[in-house]
Length: 440
Image 1 (cartoon, rainbow, N blue to C red):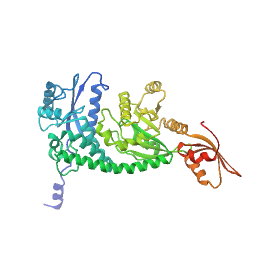
Image 2 (image 1 turned 180 degrees about the horizontal axis):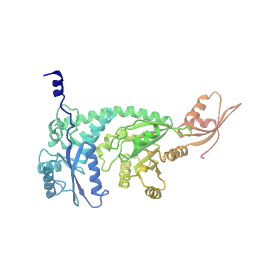
Image 3 (image 1 turned 60 degrees about the vertical axis):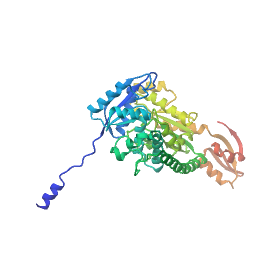
Image 4 (image 1 turned 45 degrees about the vertical axis):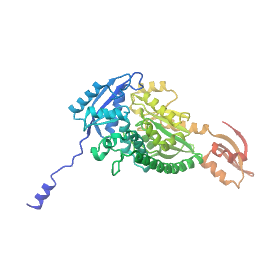
């Protein structure tokens, strides 16, 4: 055979992507729920797609309360088992957190090799996919282990990727060489991860404190996942933060400096997105990241104006604010993606939320008003002083130019005369040379 023929035969194959896992999503409709079951299952389906699955069916059941043994009723559990078999499903995902016993009982009903996971496991799985920094990966590992600890009995073998072939819900303990079944070992691992995170938190805290001590006004972009926080940060600061139309595309907070038109320097921080039923293990694990919100002077609560569930999303975000102690920080609703709205819809939204801001990170619409608002809030925290700085205090003159807002400046025999708006951090430095002040 000729060389050409050999090459042709050797190269006559194509590489195909691994088939997506087939998923069924399951919810329970309960009286008084904040989200209707259909909307919640649609979001669960998006989460499953983000994790790499193909949702082939969705089903729900009306219940006063979840069934203690199988979450759904016994008949519904059998129906799900039949559905999984008929559709060749690989995984069944429940919209609420299952207890270890509920999960084990459902596994018996549905049968192997179909996996049974819940919303929390799915979110942790997505976080495992998207964590890029060392701190992010450690935070995910901590949350995973805290979730798995009470589920050790029979759960490790079920969730270990080396025994179930990988895929959605199987990225737990990624990078581990063997299965750990002993609770003591898991607790030891949790303690070790916490120790590493504490060290990284100290480093982050030093960086954060340096920003606090600098007197720079701090703005945090927070809100529901996929509301466009990263896109907005990119537009305003010409940053290159990852911005995809995916849930939880951003896990690690990113801070960028920004200079307002008046010359004031501020920081803008993009933070991890929130979601309804956000697992408490994640809130605890991502505490150091969420501290960026708690330490802000102003929170821009970014809302996806094009979402049909934006009201429920606002409520879910505010619940997290309360959980992390950020409910009393000054914040404003910032409706993003306004370019996707009809004019009448936008007018109605402005009428309903008269104190909110409306922007589009895609087109730049409304960003001038946003920057003006930030400048006003930042300036409102300053005190107007009239000072005379001796010529041997050129350092204070430089500080005034770099960190304060100067209204007027003249040079006379006794020194530099300034009318200046000074932030609270620097008041003690300038008040010694004060000849007049007001709170204007």
